[in-house]
Length: 289
Ligand code: 13P
Image 1 (cartoon, rainbow, N blue to C red):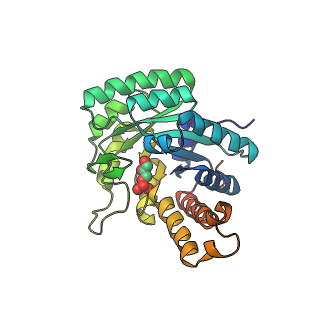
Image 2: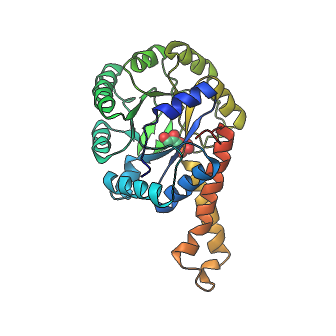
Image 3: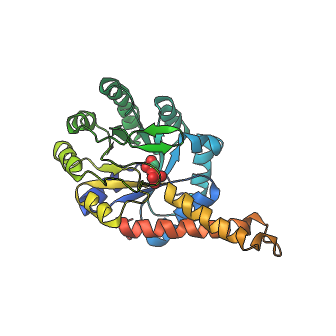
């Protein structure tokens, strides 16, 4: 039986091999199936991200664990797959650990650094016992995702070191990145900040949030500076919505059995697959399973 794995080995391999593993956020069965099938076709490791809002939408964490584990078996998925809580609260992290997630992000970036450290430490201990990977965050990521709003600041490299030293698996650090679409006047990623963080935290795999819309050259440079995990959410949503709109606007839902959800959702499903493929190729994770 295929099993969910921690993200630790796949991210350490990625950092050493100078590529990044994609975290793609899931919203429902079609999303999950599209991402898993693409990872298998490309022989790529993959991380399925679940925000707390998406967790509620999909009927709770145990439902999600059941769905994903069922798919690993029914679809014969053999590439490494981690099921990861995205931007978890302290309570959400504990709930996902209990539900069977294989990876957790605790986003304590909005707490004062001492409180972030205390809460992260407690979770490091819980995750280590169970072999679950843990992502911590320093310096909030800008934009809005499922009600979690950040201002897009650059993390303080010394604070990054304090949190990395707690024994987390990977570290998300704000470097001017934001969730959602980037505004026209976006200044770009701060590579000086990224290099300074890398200098302090050494071999710790770094995580780049807000992967939607970052130009390919910036992605490649970020990977060369230690980014080993890149999160993508909005881009799959935009691709799904555009393909679904095209289907409906062409009147296809009114032709024959075009209203059948298995037909209606098919273009969006294929659009997610194409987006995930494009990202895996850009991140360099193809054939790295
Ligand atoms: P985007 O929605 O901008 O791709 O960001 C995803 C993300 O960082 C999830 O944590």
